[in-house]
Length: 135
Image (tube, rainbow, N blue to C red; front, side, top):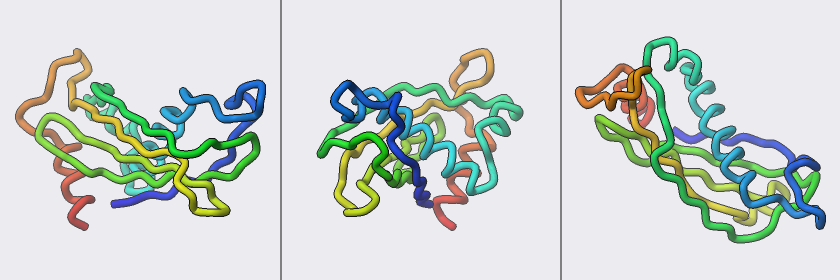
């Protein structure tokens, strides 16, 4: 299961020098996660309707090369680790016209109920992600 999301670095995502602000990479990671799930038929809003939330419990990003205002980028997102209680989405961001890696990282999410309790005995989302990874 891999999803490619294309977008551009917007003016508000850059600093005074036109370089993408480091905190925006997490926004792009989220964009990739959302697109991956939506493209496979299960948006975040559908998960929430089933009573499953995915709070971020860990995040990491390694910056490799700068991105600039109005540059087209590609966000490659995949599920790389899955357990009964959590999922890891790995993201790699590329300069679209050169395929040069700009950043790579991951976010780890716990499966919780709407009242914040960890879902320890499996859940429909975990099963769905497992099927997507195999298919």
